[in-house]
Image (cartoon, rainbow, N blue to C red; front, side):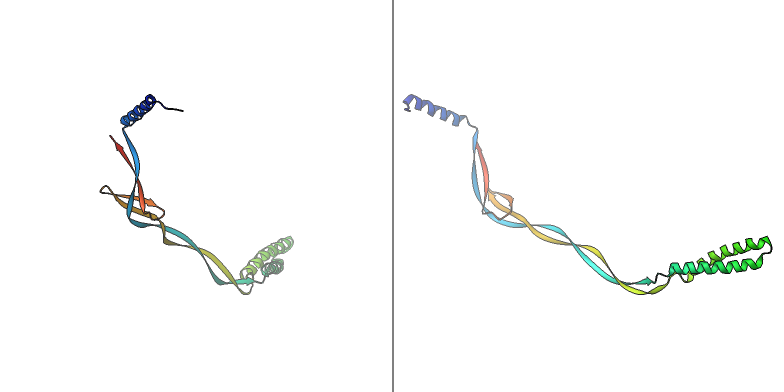
Length: 173
């Protein structure tokens, strides 16, 4: 494709016109970093700790129920005998039955109070509980990079120290 002097002139005028009609343009300049300071964040860590201890617990012989039954039977028999002594005639039967019932209840109560807690001894039992404590620590979270651009201090945060900070500059006219 060949270009004529007229088409070259037209293209030049169009480019010059677009540049002249532009309000401005932008460019990127790199500014040298004067200081990079580390930034730390505080982190709370939960530390679970298990604490164990030993306690002595009573061991029952398992005879508590048997003692209650024996006490009830013995109390019922004794109450029946005493009730039989009190009554006379047809009242003797009522007194015997009433004495047996009251004796049964009394025998259970006495056996439960004095004989129901048969302790064969003690055993050592290990019990543990988890206690949570918290510990604070500082962790590096990044860097604040500082530079001077046209007499003003600028800063940029990053995950590592920078050597230069890119600055977009817009020129308008």
